[in-house]
Length: 138
Image (cartoon, rainbow, N blue to C red; front, top):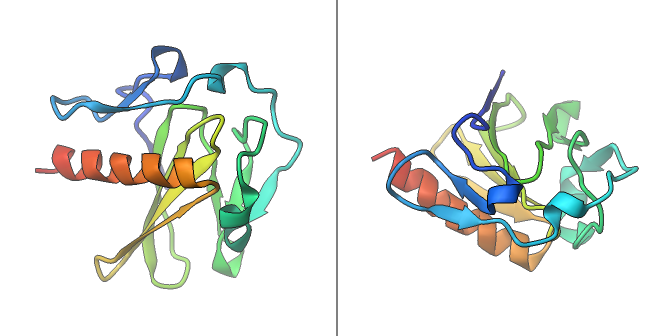
């Protein structure tokens, strides 16, 4: 099951990811809308932190979790929350940040959350997005 927030999330051309509320948004770094598509179609979860700035748009690729479960990488500037049954995870919130790559929040069934990102900038943006998500659920 996948729940994409693209209907209420501003796309890269508007340079803001938002949860459709008054909590604000997270700016997408410039250049994401001009990236060429990546030729990589699968990235294992343990490869994400060493991926770095991919230099291409990862849209359409998949992150492979434990048990070969896969999470789709959305378009640049899109927030996607996907239900998973991999290990102790319940959902994965993934954002394609464009130039700095992707950020993922791995949400455990026990309420825990871990951020995994392809670069330090993507990690910072993902943590900002997590704060926004907390604001939208209040």
